[in-house]
Length: 496
Image (cartoon, rainbow, N blue to C red; front, side, top):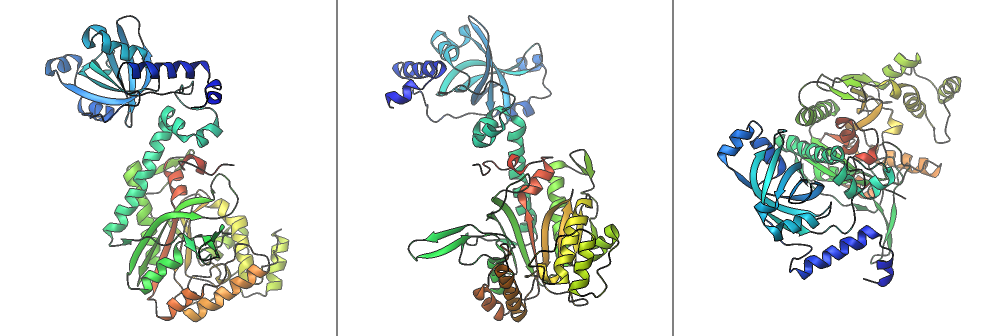
């Protein structure tokens, strides 16, 4: 360690380093070694929840716990403290006459933030708090920096995101939110595995961005001297596996989109995409509803959920409405009628909808109307289906009205939670859709994708009728943890 670094240390850090050196002089490794505990704080609280002080005294049980020292009080020969592990905190009661002079000094000189192992008797205080009365203290690891002043939560939002470990130490609500996130992902897997889906892994590096309308991150492969992109979706590789005969596949993975950041968007995020052969978008609506209701029940229990004070009937059948009907209901404009692009542009102008350069057909204007007027009205879980062909390059055309596709999006609290469709499996139609996308890209639509000729070739070998689904995991976690910003459900959100 350089002198320059030592000179930058504050008084508390210097004292902690001196204590570290003193431990080493005593033959105690300041950073410890393997330690075997018999229980966590949560396990002890669950096991002895209904035991009184007298009953605990009579059964005379012992336990060994380990964790971070979070509070400490007391003088002279007696001290109380709280040890924090992954389940929460538990109190310890340390007496010099019970642990001995030398062992008591380890406790007395321990700083908040240090890791300790504690062996002792399980008791309950006069105040009713479950406590470990120590018979031996083991130093496990020295904390060389003091913890943030306010143990019940960091107030500096920037620090909370940059130094998530401090947030997890000091904010139990945040810690529990990430435990819930892990459970949500685990329950999605459990549900799909139970339906016979196969979890797979597909490449993160792609030669051509595809499977979504988004601007990609571009990188360079030195060995092959080619530019590549980070995936903006897992879709096209998963559908290649349907061509290969896997029939029911899914992938939970990181997606990268080189776009803006706000309360619900981060440049890298997690999605679940699933594809099922011989299914259509109606089957996938049922699958989507099943996934979300299963996960909600697993992490929140039976019944509706509350999000920012609004009750969401997540346990009831989700509403299903065609995009054109939803637009008509909100605005009175009827896009079922056949109309020219000029007529649609005139209606858009009348309703103050900006007409972009790449709006080359009525479908683009229908989609713009939906985004402008309808999305903000969708509070309860709603499947909106029947998107225009122009904004759905990978979805199958509707057999009854080929202006629209057999596609849907799931909306809850005005936000999109899932996107799905009966997959386009006609390679000739797919190529023409890709070509239209490539043209839109040339006209300035930086979210349009290029042509993936290899995918078209895969379709030429034959893909069965297939339904597919994509759900944003992060938004789902936000919904089920009543969180308003995506940064609070990402352990390490993107920062400047």
